[in-house]
Image (cartoon, rainbow, N blue to C red; front, side, top):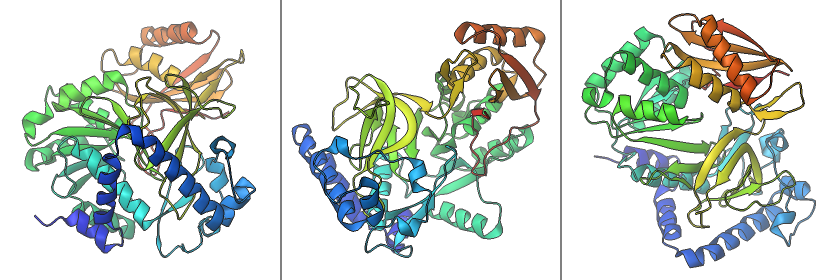
Length: 436
């Protein structure tokens, strides 16, 4: 079989062969020598941008540095200016890879990668999917993503899907008759893996649960399910494993960077240490030891077109105490730093606290398919949900009692049953939103 995926990258100016070769060299560096590799790459990328990137020079305020911890932290808001003003010398909008973030964090921006850096991203992706027997050049993917609805955008994505051995299931309408169509496609296509947004894939699994069907029985070629972009709760993971009959792999990435962490065959969330340097910082920008919760701050070690140096991605997480510099393990991803609930007492809690509490109660009978929570006032929250039947007073009382126990009393909840929930343009479902 012609390696169409590799070939398309090469023809578009992304040197994938060279990138795969470099990735193999990095992976072969012994643990005891890895500290030197990381130290040298950090020094190299900072010095490059201080010398060749006027935007980064102004951001740092000098053209040389001595201590890593003295480098200022970059945030998404720092990139809210024209891309051409942020590019390094020798790079233009015509010779780099350009894309934009989804905006799920509230601060979308356009970014660039030099073509070699982007090739390394793909080499890294291929290596990690390869842990699970998935080959981008030959394995057929069932893709649960959004898709542009305009003719040109739609055609472009469909062509990319063809080159990448993907069949795309559009996730903007996930009613039962649409999911029935998804199921029929699994009966006739030899899919090797599922990949896409967590909430959409979970909804498909619930549909299979209602029909008492296991997807592997219908599509015997299926090997794995990879979920991304949204939180994967443990009970949802168990549901996916049961209804799909294959391993469920958790992916954590950012389009402007790379795959940040990917579940390995030992079910560890292994952090990408080859092309990224990941730090966990406290509120005063001090590096925290393994095992402690803090802000996830990432440096792209190879991107020369655009600086992502000590870049606060906006998430909170914990690196496992068994982590090493070569093999860091993400123990827990707690969620977005800006998804915080501020309560009348002044207490602050992660938005996911509501989600965990509510989810555990209203999904007991599989009636509720999915839901989101919106904070509309300091003491008022709206719960929008999709279900077979309306929530009853007993269920609502249980939710309110649990939230009083976990958070505080005196909060008001208003419940709205919906035909379907509003998703972003990309198809993501934001599970908690603060409107205050």
